[in-house]
Every structure is written in C-alpha cells, then in structure tokens.
Length: 138
Picture 1 (tube, rainbow, N blue to C red):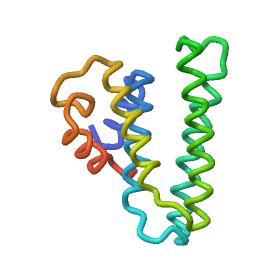
Picture 2 (picture 1 turned 180 degrees about the vertical axis):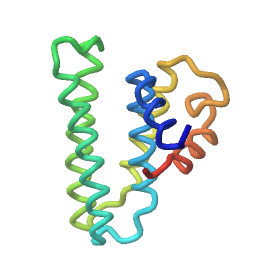
Picture 3 (picture 1 turned 45 degrees about the vertical axis):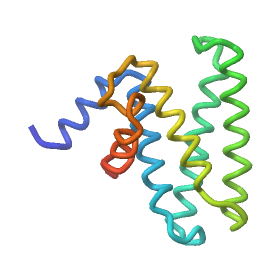
C-alpha cells in the first residue's frame, strides 16, 4: 500500500477529534515556521488559520453540535479573538505566538477528550511539541 493510500485510509478512520487535532497540528506547524509575516506564504498561513477557526465556529453554531452551550460560547469568543489577533499579525502589529499557544491548547483539549495517555500531546507537553513538528505538510 502506498503512503498516499495509507493517508486516505487514515483520514477516513479518524474520529472528528483526531481530524481536528491533525488539522490544528498542521496549521500550527506552519504558523511556527513564519519568518516574515509579509511573505505571501505566511499571509496564506494566517488566513488558513482563520479559516480553520471559522469552520470550527460554524460547526459550533449547528443545533446538532453536542457540546454544552457555555463551551460553544467560549469557543466562538475564542474564534473572534483569533480573527482579531490575526488581523493585527497581518498588519505587523502582533506576533503569531499567541495564535500558536491557543492552537496548542485546543490540541491538548482534543487529546484529553479522546482519553489518551502520557505519550500523547495532552499528557506530555514535549509530545505536543513533537506532534506539531512532525505533521506531514501534504
């Protein structure tokens, strides 16, 4: 089986939390790699992060979303903050560090929700750092 075939099978077998985690790890890795916020690839990365959060917010507003209303409201507020901070980053007035921190926090929450052990990023900050660094950019 080719690697691409393996990736396709893995994607189909992911839980929603695993898919969200992988998506956040990829975008967070890209945010970490930003050297110059004016570089077109960097701008694209910041906008991709906004798009991820926008998708999360849209999902949170669906009536069938099972999360408690209070958590939904907190996550939507977080999306609004991510959007505002991202605009400041793009104007050169803020760093990507807080965006990276927020993404890592959400990744830890997604991992904890899945009930993972010490080798998983939720139970081990070093594992979280490795996960962000090793996500395949494909």
